[in-house]
Length: 367
Image 1 (cartoon, helix red, strand yellow):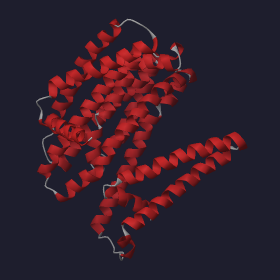
Image 2 (cartoon, rainbow, N blue to C red):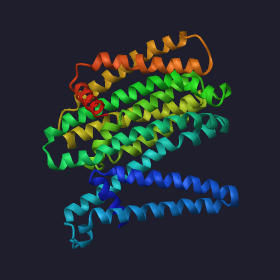
Image 3 (tube, rainbow, N blue to C red):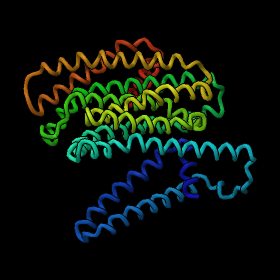
Image 4 (cartoon, one colour):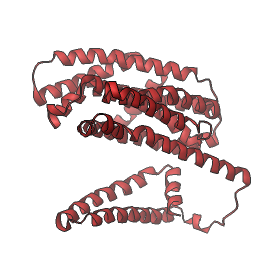
């Protein structure tokens, strides 16, 4: 029942409520765990606090949902018809397959690196992963916040109204992840060097592969947002299996001669041979009901802009004099200005750009 009530809050486009409860409880949990570890040295108590925090969060959200939607508890339950029930069951099964596939693809890199390269390389990779996971966590809030609105659009409006919304979301995601990939290529090793030291650096080739995987994973988010909102899990239910098999096979094959680079290349290959084309094909065929050709054209254009922007940013930053924090700040400034310039010159006449520029202008006026 508590899960249903939390889902109701999100479906009603009030996810900020669940976010406030989650992050408040997360902060309280970390503080309590630090105190308990300091004074009790009891790891079981540490884990017990985590369980208690989850239960408390669910209880508080349940009570909030009861106050927001008091009529829900007064409704009389009714039986679902067989067709609706079967559709829910089959989509749930397919969704589980997708989740397992995601874990296999993105959760086995450390195991493969440990097995074929060594635990030292796992430690190095964890530093880079901490940064990319942090960015992904922040960016995912934008896409997750759209899911309820997109679902409502798909349920109440005709298919023709969904396409313009998708192109706006896809445009924002392309610019965001393209710009971020440029920054990662240029700033990743300087940041790691300042943070933990030069002895913990990967080669630039591996950094490029990390940024590339971050980019291709991020470019999927607009499609996945609409897929999740529409519940289109059934049509590509076998895709996670193929993705997992390709990822493991290519990663193991390339790990022996190329080490960490080979394992990361395996992730890239599995994504491009499955998710890259299957996910948008399913969405456009069964959700948006429009030709998918434009999506691949937009993907190619955004990738070209990202690459052509990365080149001058790299050479400008490489020519900058100095060392230490000051040099890193200068490189950040170059990334912020030149890294966005390529996207601005390419997209400034686009309808999607004018839409977001209008939103930004309105926000600044209110501020």
